[in-house]
Amino acid sequence: MVEYGDRNGESLDRRRFLQLAGAASTVTVAGCANLVSNGNDDNESPRHVSHVNQVPADIQWNSSNPANTPQITNRVLFDPFVKYNFSTGKFIPYAISEWNFGGDTFELTVRDGLTWSNGDDVTASDIATQLRIGLYTGEPYADFTESIKTPDDSTVKLQFDSTVNEQIVTFQILADRFVHQKESEFGTYLETLQNDEQKGLKQLGDFAYQEPIASGPFEHDSVGQEQLRLTLRDDHPDAEKINFDEYVFEYRESNQQAQQALQNGAIDSVFSLFVQTDILKNFPKKVTQIQTPSNWGYGLYPNHSDPHLGDRAVRQAIQYVINRAQVRDNVSPDSKTAPEYPVGIASDNQTEWLGDAVDDFDTYGVDSAKTKQATTVLEEAGYQKQNGTWVDSDGKTVELPIMVPSDWSDWNTATDTVVDQLTQFGFQATKETRSYDAMLGNVFPNGNFVIVAAGWLYGAPQGSFPYFSLYHQLVKNNDSVTYNYPAADSSRGGNRADVTVPARSGSGTMTVNPAERLSELAGSTDESTVNEITIEQAWVTNQDLPMLPVLEKVEQTFITGGEEWDIPKPDAEVAQVQWANTWLPRQGEMQYTGN
Image 1 (cartoon, rainbow, N blue to C red):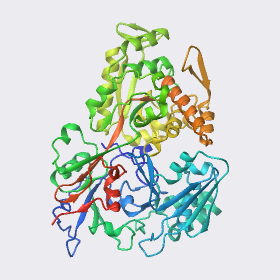
Image 2: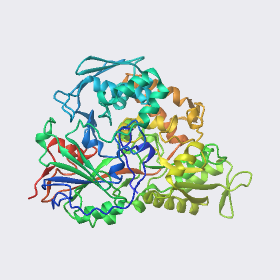
Image 3: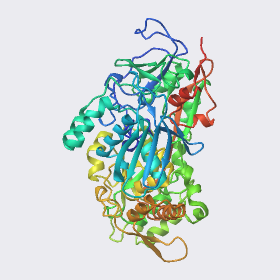
């Protein structure tokens, strides 16, 4: 199974870990290297063939409709507002050429020369339409946005009802957002929302946008059960950088089928694909792997209402026992990392944000099982071993059933390893499997689990700024999982209560309210305050372990190079943008060189 990391309603949702769907593909069309006709073309022309694991004919491009939303095709059809570069840690202007933050305002400038595929100019009214729709559909910026105005055809101005942190504003308004809800197509839905919100949400949510008007360099041409064909637009500002005429997406149901298609040269790229190290070694040399952070990965959500998992000592003991490096190696070291510190901050950003305080934080053992520490913390809390099994003060066995999606192969491998480690230590650990649909429908919202495998970070690119993942762990997780952590929002089973943990320095304890402190961070423009609260709340996650971090995913994008395509080196700055196979063409960095 692919752990997709492309969340946000605009595309594949990282927070919901959209599972693979559809029927087996019988496509045999070769990629650009072979220039084989798909039977729909009168003349063969240079094309790039990529992978999609959705039946193309089922895809619709209304991001406000949760059914059959695209996982990658939207990133070719529609222009991004901006892109986040993981190498530089900065945003790259694109459809939004400039943005200016004013504390309680945010002004966007639309890039000059952008047009829709029907010939209309992309205007501020188009951008404002989709941002205004977001005020009704639950976009995070709705919490602080008072109004959205268009002073002229190229300017959108958001007015906030209070001062908001600039990084939060930038990530929530610009990141992973695309120019796609054209005013002429979606304006009527906005009008209905403004007059009758319930009716408008129903109409908007039912609208299947299957013949989209594109803002990106390629437009919708034809679609079938096995293939979606997009053709190059001559009037796009970056069309001159692209030297192939078609971008084609072919359907493959499974990871294995996509892997085989890459190996056989049947496709030219896959935006995100889980490929184990032993399989990767057999890939042709011309297939280039580009790795980027996912800021998301396999973690364990304990049900804090459980008599044992609600005990911090048990959570800490579990974290001490798990050898994260061994879990990583058993799954695939090319696709996973073992986070250094179990905190609510992505691995690549931990040292940067924790700074001089980093040595205060407990690693709980990255590459070994800290069984002595686990034993000590349990015994101090009144637990003991009876006949090799841990029991509480009442003699009740500590049972740790871990639930995991049945069809997520890498997470099942990780869970098997974790269960083995916990069992060897003396916990009664087991693995339970459910279909992901069943977990979404019953397990997650109702808290029907003891421990469930789910994502412990917010996801890229927002996960690069610690506020989002700290909020995810402490207050309101993105997976709609009810896990009853006392500090969490009521929608997640908590009551936004105070949390008391050991003091970071010296003896004694520290009591804080995570919801209130993170709200303070969200409204602060003072860098020292942001840093102080970040370290403080990271300490809470490290000591109280509302979620147990185990692995972090490394995104694997694959593009065929060699004689067919001229692409940059995988560590080149320009390639460190998700997803490279849709971004590089816009930069003139994915050139067709075949005959």
